[in-house]
Image 1 (cartoon, rainbow, N blue to C red):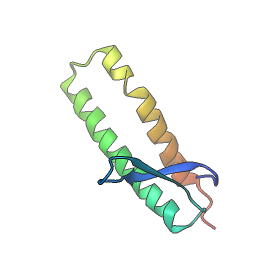
Image 2: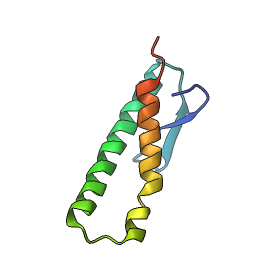
Image 3: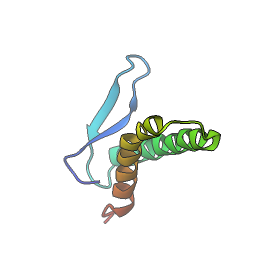
Image 4: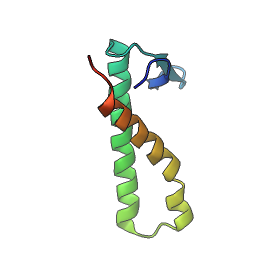
Length: 85
């Protein structure tokens, strides 16, 4: 991911607030944000897969997943294409 971009590293269990960082490329916090993004994408894939498997969701209900899927896909592509030098 590019420098200067806010990245989530999860939710603080004590406050329920999401924690964001501006991580240095290749640094510890970037790795933490990458792990969080991949776990979140995996959960999203499981949820959407379960909804599709049932086959009873309306077009509007399925469309509600598009922004989240787009964001997760964009973040995963950014992780895969990041310059790790």
